[in-house]
Amino acid sequence: MRYCGVVPAGQYLQLALLEEVRTEEPPIRLAARFYEPGSPEDVVKELRSTEDVVVGVGAALSSGRRADGELRRRGVVPLAPHEGAQAMTEALGLAIYTGGPTDVVDESAYITTPVFETHPDGVFFALRGLRLPAKRHPLGIQLRIEELQDEHVEDGGGDLWHRRIEELEAAAVALAAHRFAVGHACWVGDPSEGVIVLPGYRLPERFSGDGVIPPVARVPLG
Image (cartoon, rainbow, N blue to C red; front, side, top):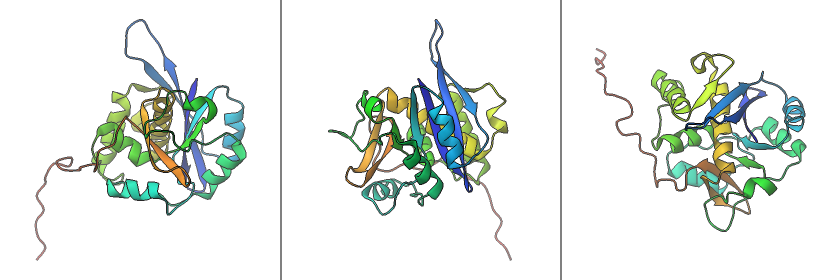
C-alpha cells in the first residue's frame, strides 16, 4: 500500500508518498518519496501509475461547510478552495470519503473510498494534540519536522530539514492517509457537504496553544 499526500504549492500541486518499512523490531518506519511540484494532470498521471494508493488531499474542495466551522472552533483556520486540487480530485476518478456511521473512520473505508479531504495544519495539530505556531515562526517549522520524525517518517532522498514547507505538509497529509487506511482517524462535518479527516480517534474540543511558544522579552518602543 502506498500512502499519498497532495497539497497546493502555489499554482501547482506537491505530492509526497509514504511506504511502510517493516523490520523484526517495531516501530514501523515510513519511507518518504517527494516529487517535483506539478500540474493537476501530472499528479493524476503519477497516481494512476501507482498501484494500491490511498490519497489525502490537503486542500479545501469546497467552502462554507460545517466541517470548516468545526475546524475553526478548534483553532484551525479553514483553507480556501484550490482549483488545482479540485481538478486533480475530479480527474482522478476515485471515490471520496464522505463519513460513516460514527465519526471514527472504519478501517476498511479506504477500500471503497481511497480519497479523502484533510487539512495540513489540522493533521499536525491532531498528531501533536496542540495548536502549533504558524509556519512563518521558526519554532512552527521545527515542531512540524519533529512531529514527522516522531512518527518515524524517513527521508531517503535527503533531510526533512532541507525540505520546503509544502513538502513537509504533503508528508503530513500522506501520514494522515496511513492513519486513514489503518482506521486510526476521525472526521468532522456533514456528509452531505463533504467531511474533513484528521488522525486520531477523537479530536479535542479546542487545540490549545498555551505554553507552546516560550515567553520572550520585548522592549517597548519609545
